Structures are given as structure tokens and as C-alpha cells.
Amino acid sequence: MNHTTHILRPVVRAALWCTLCLSGAAAWAQAAPAPTAPPAPNADVTSRLEALAREVAELKAKLAAPAPAPVNGPDVINGAPASATPDTVWSGYGEINYNRYKNNRANDQADLRRLVLGMNRRLDARTQLVTEIEYEHAVTSADDAGEVAIEQAYVERELHPLWSARVGLFLMPAGFLNESHEPTAYYGVERNFVETAIIPSTWREGGVQFLGNLDGGWRVQAGVSTGFNFAKWDSTSAEGAESPLGATHQELAQAKARNLALFGAVNWRGLPGVQLGASWFHGGASHAQAEAAGHRMAVTLWDVHGRYTPDAWDLQALFAQGTVSGTAAFNSLSLSSGPDWYPVPKRFSGGYVQAAYRLWQVDDYTFKPFVRWERFNTAQAYADLGPGLTQTAARAEIVRTLGINIDVGSHVVLKADGQVFQKDRTLHRFNLGLGWSF
Image 1 (cartoon, rainbow, N blue to C red):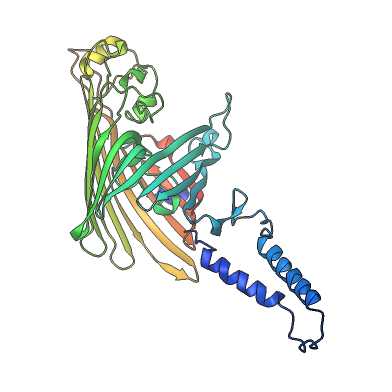
Image 2 (cartoon, rainbow, N blue to C red):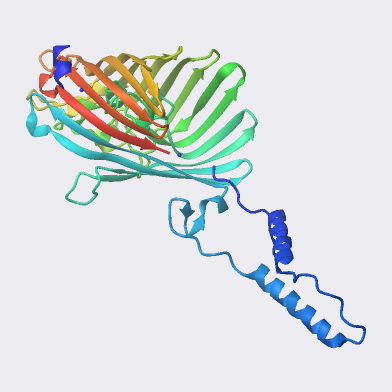
């Protein structure tokens, strides 16, 4: 641990018809002339009628006048005050990170890691549209590493007070992080390795999903979706070694869909401060493509997780495991004994335990130190290819993280942590981060 010390958002409707009527009445009252002495009996009736007509015309003009043009600002959406769009909710999050390496200084970097903007539109009392677009690494061009991606785009329909359905591109219900990955929702500058290398957050698929919020604190999710595509696997690239499923996800971008997947998740929050859950996914990943030479491959990924938040404590644990079938026949297509050969593993897994404590709170600042231990292996086992040909399983990496989250109100977080790597010590690093969500 001596390395660690070295390395530390509804918009409310503003005017209803009844309000307009009341406003008109108020305007008429203000425009009405002060009472005057009654005219003499011989007054000109015609002139009195003309004056009354002018007053009525002035009042009508005031009521028909358009509202003042809004000033551009944070409360203006598409040129209209936010309060005038009660069925639209804007959301988003972002993070800027700084990584300083102890033993590999050339890799030090500062990065606007991601900026995400979302728009939820309620189409009627039971239907809503959810969309979200993500920008990564500040600049997107042919010569830059940036990326623009649609993170969510689905329609959700209430079928019953307890049940709803989603159709479109949605985040998969797996672990803690994949559906709740805003920087204000997790500890540490970087997302944990288990929920990025094993569960490829942010993992999204196209399909149909049913959600039930049931009595007793149960939340159930299940559906049919697209899946992974191992024809994308590059046996000469280390990308697959970093995250086997991250290298083969499709994100509904002209996704191969000969093979579909089934998935499900259940979470229980029946006691205060307690969450227990699990998820499961299974689907084909070869899609009858020539690159797989007709060999059928399938991915299974599951996790179990738990969280307990008594008083000032926040305790979490998670374990995830993935398997790929049919890897022996697939790997034989690129058989090599060279050092730069990266075959598809048949099993990968990882888990972590984490403890955080709300140490100090003053005004709207909250200081929450945390510690996390995680162990993961992206190539835990390979299918047998015969003597001298089977790839040796990789060693598991163990990462210890010690840091602090400083919440500034409920929408901004400042972070600092140090990370120590047991296997690859060139990755020892100190991280700083700024995150926000709304």
C-alpha cells in the first residue's frame, strides 16, 4: 500500500388556459379607466359609444400581443422557456480526468473523457421517448480518437401500473454500473475494471425489454436483444485481451442479427439500505458468417451483486463471469504460436469489494473516502487445441484503489485516487477527476 500514498439535473408547465383567462381579466382591470362622473343627461350618446369601442379594441390588442421573446440561457430550450415544455426533460453528464503514472510517465494524460446529452419526451400519459448521445475524447475526426455514439434510443410504454415495455436501443441490466454510470453515481475517477473489462459498460443492445416494479421491493427485467459478433475479433490485436466482449459488441450499428439473445435481471430492495441482484445473458455470436467458417459461437454472461448502506457506510460487492462456446474451432482458423496471437478465451471473470464512508459534511460539501479491491482475468481459460497449441491462461490482475469523492451539492463531484496494480506495475497511477450530472 506504500505505492498508493505516492500515486491519490421536471420542467413545470407555466401557463394553462385558466391562467390565460385570469391574466386577461387582470389586464382588462388594469386597462379600464378610472371611474368618472356620470355624463350630463344631454351628453352625446354617439361619442360615448365610440369611446367604449376604443377601449374594447385596446383591450383586445393587449390580449392578442405575443409574449416577449425569451433571452437565451439555461432555462431556454429551442427558443422557448423550459417551463413551456413540461413534457420534455433534458439530462446529461460529463467527466474530465487526469491520469499521472508513476513508472510510465509518457502515458500521463488529461482527457475530456465523455460528454453525454439526453432528451426524454413524454408522448402521452403512458408513453415516453428516451434518447441519449455521447461524445468521447473532446474531438471527433478521421485523425482523432474521439467518438460519437447513440447511447440510448427507445420508446417505453406503460402496460400496467406495475409493468412497462421498452423497444429500441437500451442499456442492458447488468451489475451496478451499466445502467447507472454517471460519474456522480460511482466511486473513483475511473470506472472499475470488472464492470468495464468483464461487463463491457456501457453495454447497449437493440431489442424488446419488459420491466416490472413489483411489491416487496422487487424489480424484474427480461427481454430479447441483439448480441455480440465474434467475426469482429482480431487475433493480432490486444483489444480483445483488454475486454473480450468490449471488442465484439455491436451497439446496434448495422448489427449482425442472425442470432438473437435472451437476457434477464432481478434486483431486490425489500429492506432499507439493502440491494441484492443478479443478471444473465445468453446469445449466439457467429451469425452464420464466413469469418466463423460456419462454427456456432455463443456468449453467456452473468453476475451477482449486493449493496448495503447503513448510516454513513456504503458497502458493495460484485462478481461477474463470461464464457464463449465454440472457441476451439474458431481459434483454429488463426492458429499461431507467435507472441502476438490473441485467441478468443473460453472463460473470463472478475469481482470486487468496495467500502466508502461519509466522513464529513459541511454546507453542501460531502467528503467520502473509499477503498476498493478488485481481481479480474480477461483470459482465464482457453479451449484445448492440442498439445503445444493451446494458449496459456493469463494471470489475474489485482488492483487496489484508495481515494475520495467530494460531492459539491448533488450534481457535481470532485475525485482523487491512487491505484496499485499487482501484475503490471507500469500501470501504477494517481488520478484526478471532475464529474457532473443533471
